[in-house]
Image (tube, rainbow, N blue to C red):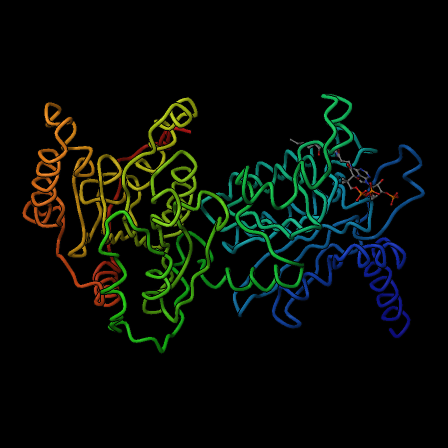
Length: 510
Ligand code: HXC
């Protein structure tokens, strides 16, 4: 027995070395951790159970039969994060650049199947060059199997992708079909084809960072949801994120006990709105002041900053916050902001996370750039997402709610459950100046008369009461009481049951 145990230990230690000491050192020199080091940081101590550590590829082309490494470039298994089961696969860049072979794919699909069958989240740590070139179509077939499972699991269990090295081909397409993508600054890249292929095909010279670095994907393409300074910070943030997410679409959200009084008043909110309606203020201050212990996990912090989305907790329960941000473009809705928020609202709805919406929106952004870019379709995405969502929806209008954007931002008309307004709310078709200039075109040349018309319009519409008189606003609340009101509403809505008409699936304007 001693011999076989020793043999087991020997085989385990060979597998643990992956591509060997040399390549592990190279990985560390690049500022990256190895696959197993990453898993150790991400999972609870000693909770990780590895599967398929002895799997090897079966390729016999290009001399590959002489080059086999146990594990075949991916570490798979399951463990816990803060006590909750999570499935994981981590690409091992030290083994054939983490590239995917037929057997490597089988390891991943085994874990994907287990995650779906056992209804627990799955996290992929990516550091890999796509399909293993030596395997050809066997590798492509393997990716097809992974992609299919990404789609089948979508909306059933949360799927998180973390990009921790150079990633190409299938190693960016699979993440693209998951719920969230996070990157590490300076060491991770995502592109369908790398700089060399770009140069060959288009003659364009571009560095990996310029083509698919974290800066590009968090600010321009919006492919990535956030980027972190290094592997350690990134993985610790993933642990934090998982605490907000349910295990699956039927499990209910994870509730954490909080010492933060749900009725806590925040007197400083009474002066958050500036006297001048055109002066910005920081909507994040409101989110942080109402959320439990000021804890807010922002998603896509650097993209479309005119809208804020992210997770927090109210009275211990996870919440998705959506809020216009007056600090950027006056909080206007444009194509990017609409797409960003729509995807977030749909994630929350998939996983029964209630949505709290803070509204201060001057409307949709006018102009040819937006119209040519498809603002109508992109804006419709957000309208669609809020309308179809059946989770509890609580909305607070803090200041402007103008035009179509009023309807879009989780209004009563699209099944907002509880719709509050602060006394500073202005709910109208447009701002007083624009309205007066259209209604009283003849007074345009007369500054004094126009000012009077603007004042008249302001007096009539620049308040929440016309909407409240119609029941579109359930109550006008004091800013300081916002947290208490939302907590109570969410408590009242805990067992909300609404079903959309039967359909195979809807047809959101993509
Ligand atoms: C086999 C690969 C590989 C691959 C990298 N390696 N990618 N082996 N198949 N796809 C190997 C390298 O040969 C090298 O082996 C080791 O991994 C490290 O790679 P380097 O090139 O030295 O590292 P680096 O300079 O950091 O560049 C990383 C990289 C680059 C950007 C990922 O390797 C690269 O461009 N690879 C090819 C990417 C690609 O086009 N993949 C196919 C995508 S098609 P040694 O032994 O020298 O250490 C695809 C289809 C899916 O995925 C379907 C999509 C819809």
